[in-house]
Length: 213
Image (cartoon, rainbow, N blue to C red; front, side, top):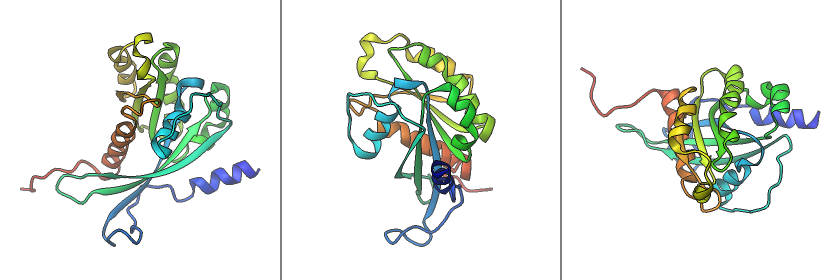
C-alpha cells in the first residue's frame, strides 16, 4: 500500500497547465510540469540515461529497476516569438519486465506527457519490442510525444541495427529517433530537450514569429 500511495502522491499535480514560477522567475513566466516515462526492455540503459541526465553520473554495473524510480529536472524550452517555457520533467524509470508492465500499466503510465523509448543498439530484439511498449503506454494516455533513444551508441561497432532501421520502427508510432550514450553522455541532454520541446508543442501548440493577418 505504501508504494501505491507514493505513486499517487507523485502523480498529483502533474499536468500541463501554466503556473507561476519560483522566486528566480518572473510571475508571468510560463511553466509546465510533465511526466516522462522511460520504457523498454531490461538492460538497455534506462536507469543509466536518467543518472547521466539528472546527476551527470555513469556506472557500468547493471542494477535491475524494481517497480519504478522517479527523478526530477527542469529544462528551458525556447518558443520563437514568445517567452521560453520552463518544463519540470518528472522522469519515471519503469521496470523492463513486460509481464509487470501489462499488470501495472494504469498506475505507471497514467498522466504521462512524453515517452522516452529506449533500446540497445547492440541487441536487435530491444528495438523490435518498442512498438509493443509504446502501445501499452498509449492505451492509457492516448497519443503521446515519443522519442526513441538508440542507447549504447559508444558500442556502434557491435550494433545489430542502424538508425534507418530504427526509424522504420519509430514511424509506426510517430516517434523521433536519436542515438545516445549514457556512458559518454552523447546526446543524452539533447534527447530530453527534444522530448520536452515536443511536449510543449503538444500542450501549447506551435509558435511562429509571423503576425496574424
